[in-house]
Every structure is written in C-alpha cells, then in structure tokens.
Length: 198
Image (cartoon, rainbow, N blue to C red; front, top):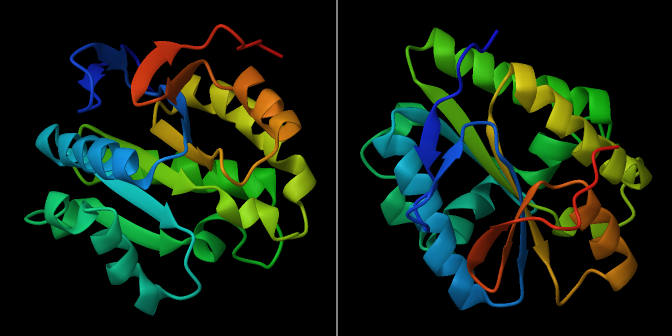
C-alpha cells in the first residue's frame, strides 16, 4: 500500500516525523491540550491530509462545544471535506463494545479513503477517557494499541492517543507507554524509552 513514507510536521515541534507515527499523548493540563491539538490539526490540513478527531462526548450534538473547548474549531475551518469528527462511541465502539479488529479496520479505511480522495495522507487524534467507563472489550485496548504499530507500516496513518494522567492509574499508563514508540509529556515530544516492540 504505502511505499516511501513522507515526513510530516506535527505542528507543535519543528522536528519532522514519518507519517504513520503512533503517538501517546500523556497530559494533565487542559491549557496544554489547547496548545498542542490545534497545531496538530492545522498541520494536517496544511499538508493536504485528512484529519479525524474522536471526542469523548455523549452525542454528535456535543461535538461543536468539545471542539470549541479545545480551540480546535478555528484550526479546522476552511477545509470541511478533509475533517471528520466523531464521538468516542462512533469511533471506538460503534456496536456497543470495543473490538480491536474493527478499530484497526476503521483506521486503515480512513487512510485508504484519504488517498482515494486525492489527499496526501491522514491523521487522527482520539480521547481515551471512554475506556474508564467499563465498555465491553476495554481489556483489549493495549492489544489494539500494539497492533496499530503494525498497521501503520502498511497504512501509515498518523495516530495520537490522548490519555489524561489525572484519570488513568499508573499501571495502565505503564502498559500504554510500552506500546507507543513516540510520546508527548509535559508538552514535549520524544522517542519513547519505554517502548517495547511486542
């Protein structure tokens, strides 16, 4: 599917990263998110990529408020055909339970559809708070996160998984860090020293 990977700007750092980078964003500041996320989204549009955002809100009617709260609304103006917003239920567990195969298929389809539409690639950012509500299949999140690293080798969609350190416990964060090659901590991006290719 993908031949040579492009190097893309993520927006919040000057360093270029290969498309298909799988990023773990560990945050404990809403102000920091309002700085990082709009830049990540804006760069998708500037680089002719599709951009998807999975917001942990109850209904589609809540999406505009969520985008405004993160200062994403302004970053996503001007290219509505490149932008897809969804609730966590629509994006992660549309059938009522989380299924890694379904999630991986949706990511692959997003990337393939972006190329078919004449775009250069795709990136998505997703909020992970939904995983704390006992959704069936949640115990397979780490499996899915690990498998994303294989998926992006052939369908290099750039993926940012957002974990709120104020809500997730240390054991979960340790597992999350083990399966993400790149992480954002304290607003700084780095190659993850905890990453282990399973």
